[in-house]
Image (cartoon, rainbow, N blue to C red):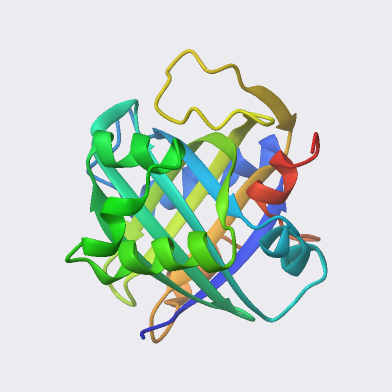
Length: 222
């Protein structure tokens, strides 16, 4: 399992304008964006004890969470993802789902998963059966992603974070979501090294590394 370095900063709107301008001069926009950004909708899973949530809130070093997501309202490409964190290192495993498969997971119709050729889909099935993992809440936000080839760097600016509260109807475009935070999250990910030019571009005075969780923020209503 390959891990990448990950750091996050909680910044304000003025900070975002500065970072956006700096990155625009040294990095490239992700080619999958629309007008420099894309909208992300994720559905997070947790167990009846809210283990994923509590591990995050309690600062547990080793954490895992499952989610399914799609981009820009396009349900023709949906990904199941397992995110593993060990302190400041992160790994993401991914599998492609059809809209029908995603909806069946939301509906609790999971028998087909055990026969899947994909190990990650079978793992989610096992967790749903043995740990009672289940869809918990929708998390919506807007992302502005930048990439830099050296170091395989990816820098993202996430904002307009919204919660589906207890709604799990992930594929319903009319599912009501509500804003939960004015925070803007700057996240930097890289492989073996972080180039000085990117380190300088994302540097802000009086901003300390943080551990903001969009999933935790979106669980504010339960």
